[in-house]
Image (cartoon, rainbow, N blue to C red):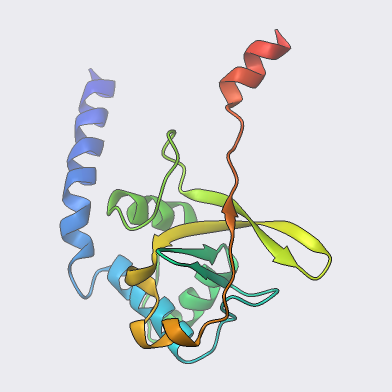
Length: 161
């Protein structure tokens, strides 16, 4: 019985989350606005080697936890406290602001070019229009990133048996 109630409660939270995100003073909206500010003010590296943000057309990869820490510090200075990272990521996923894999995980690995070849980063994938100010887009260097496909844990377990 407890599992049924818990599932129903989780479902209602997930349905309500988009409405919460639309509120300008919600933690999610404040986080997104802060990321936009960091980008607009040039306080984060965008589309550069070692950067915190990678923009490729309609998708923007925000490196975690570094970018979240930068936004968290900015908000803390304003006396606004964000929830812990995992909870924040789930709130962003439930608000449909970030991409998630089939298992609902929203922290995704990407491969980006570096000085000595490609390397992997953990990121949240946002629609570009949600986090990158439009006037910044034409000024960004071009870069491509590839979202890595994680092998299914279940398949690995079956193969081991």
